[in-house]
Image (cartoon, rainbow, N blue to C red; front, side, top):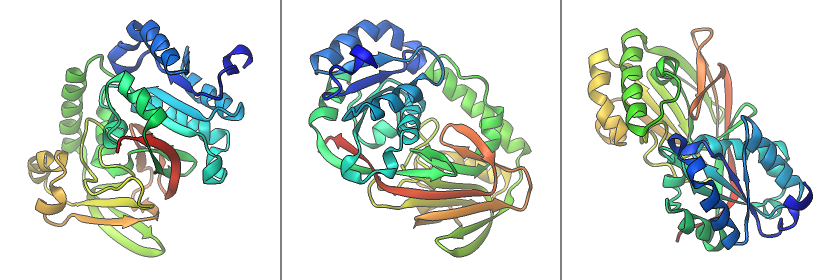
Amino acid sequence: MGDEATQADQGVVLLNPASGASRGPNNLEELTALAAAHGLRLRPSQRAGDLTRLACEEVRAGCPLIIAAGGDDSVREVLWGMDLAGVFARPGEERPYFGILPLGTFNNFARYLNVPLDPEEALATALTGVLHRVDLGRAGDRLFTESVGVGVDVAAWKAFPKESPSMFRRLWDGAIAVLKAITVFRPRRYFLEVDGRLQSFRAYHITVANSSHFSAGIAIAPHAVIDDGNLDLCVIPSLSKLGFIMAIPIIFLGKHTAYLRGVRYSQVRRVRLWSEHSGALLRIDGRLGPPLPAEIQVIPQALPMRLPV
């Protein structure tokens, strides 16, 4: 890494300049100066996959604080690089601190952790905040911060167009994708082995969540606690198309566990999930993943982070 490692004892900000509807490039000079004012280096990505590579390099060089600057996808790409470097196989006290500089459109994970959206406050928090050890999830060989899911949301992800340039357009495109998905999706029977116990549901949607929100701020797991060593399992039952459309506002606001009949909600540590239909896909955070079956588990206290009180 040459000169880039000269201040590795302080920490590094790994920036995706394209985050937040392409606002990043306009802030590159300002963010570089802001990072330097806090004794941090800034390394921007140049192409797809760079954040993962850079994070892996920083871990192997012994960097004690790695800050992901961007949206939720950028956060995960940095974590994948840390995973590739073997961070989560280390004892907890030997893992580098992790921080977030929220520059994305929705910033679900950062908002859930109460990370300040102001860049200067976010960096100060990553350096001086209160220590928490934050859980992560793993689906197969892929880490997730928010949730994995099957059912109607996978159909919506398939219908969603290429990422839109603004929050309003993404919300609009997302709403259209959901409506398209509802017209073609039929509830399916899923099988779950939950902490060694076999369960079966005919469901519209199943989520296994690490944190409360996903996608455009949907509060699918409103009771999730980020450091309790558990994932939250939420099963939305089989509904009519009209019934599901009417339930969307309730689900979006996280009120479905109290007001939607038939919802199953529980805390779990390990889930094996499969379907009666071959080829059913798993959603992993904001991307479509591999087909079922899937092995899903919590990584308790995976990330040491400094967060607000």
